[in-house]
Amino acid sequence: MSITSQAVTANNAPSSSAPEIASLLVVTQASLSLVAGLSAIPFSIVEPGFRVLSVLTILVAIGMFWLARNLRRQRRWARRWVIALEALGLLASLLLTVLPIGAMRGPVPVLVNLVMPAAVLWLLWSRSGRAAFKKAA
Amino acid sequence: MYDIAGEHAVAIGAAIALIVSLWLALRALSWLARRRIGWAVALVEAYRTTSAIASLAAVLMLVSGVIHLALIPSHEGITAVLFVINGLGFVVLGVAAFFTSWWRRPAVLWLAATIVAYVVWIIAGWETPDQIGIACKLIELVALGLILRLAQPGRRTWPRRMWRAVAFPMLASLATIGIWVGGLAHPDALHAHAGAILQPVAAVATPEQRDAAARLLSNTRASIARYQDPAAAIAAGFKPGPVSSADPLRHFENSANANAILDPKHPQALVYAQTKHGLQLIGAMYQMKSAGQWGPDPGGPLTQWHQHEGICFSPFGFEFSFETPFWTCPVGSTSITTPPMLHVWIIDNGKEGPFAADLDKTVQKQLQGS
Image (tube, rainbow over all chains, first blue to last red; front, side):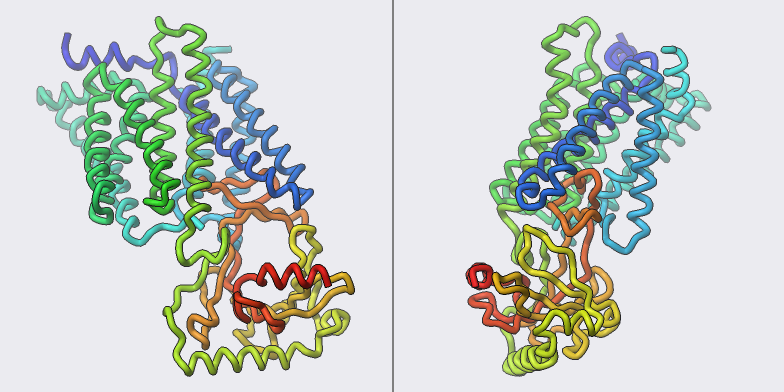
């Protein structure tokens, strides 16, 4: 067996990688949101408004885990929801980038708030991404 | 709170250079393969037959490897040795992903060990979390998640599937919490408290600086004495800030003074303390116009400006929490960085002094009880 054919055996792609990679990125975002939601709990003791934001963030994170699971299963409705949410998040982040409030300083906020949503959108809009969901339907 | 350490900035250049080099190398190999050069054909075939998930994981490991290697000169001792081992390990595993079948398990162990080691280093205080380190962990987390998805169909028993589903979010969450706790537990010298970074200044004040600081205090005290009654401040254009149950201090801001720079006659805000007998004027706050623009410090280390960063601010009132190391805030709030500010406390501020970023805790308790 040649080196190349070994690689084929080990790494052969599933029908399409786009939903799989997009799903993983959504899980990563959901994990980060979950921690943000949990971290607001101590502040909600003295800032009642943060109780609502904390619960809302945890619910959003749980929803994102669920969407990621269904994205992986190539459900078309999950693709639509993820595209809508990521587009909304990306627009909000772009707006915050323009505002002089220092919301985007350095590689971490750029990766998390701009690159990751843009990558998910690109994966789901790409030809292979669209084809994967069409095939599943 | 999470800045880019100056000596770490080279890693960004190294990562970008690697990605550009990989792209150029791929183009060159494709060109050679079209001309039937044997080894180029074999390499291009290996690349094309590797799944997108494995390719992406390999590229991310190569990026992490190059970042580690680029950071060796800025580290010393055991950390530098580990960076050499780690960087070379990632490069070997990244290349192996295209040519071998054994790379997955070592890569999972290598990535998990690297992430755990970073968290241990941060919690122990051997490393300060900065954006390069945190961005590198994000890259490694995504690479790890991708490799975990390369499951072999024959081995998809339900405990394995359950573990694969839970392992990645669990590690991502624990890594975030670990970096966060470590960073908060070991703030560097320029952090007044979590979320407030101080202006870099000399260690000792000169006699001239002491005189200038005393002048600033007396001028400020004389200038704002007319605002003892909050109604007088409101009549002069100062607007009361929102009431917060978390903060007994209230800032009254005057946007008409936005362009003044450290002018005792035109402070940007007045600070009142909520006491049992109503609001008591306790100081003034000077503020610059833009984040990162430190103001003049006539008293040197005595008049050190500070700016708040890494805080999640909700527009639904004066409510905030701290952002996570991965720069995420609860839904409905956003990370903000305030322009630098300098408080001048006209009451006795105990050990903290008249220009401290915060009101002394003992003084604050006394005011609340009075």
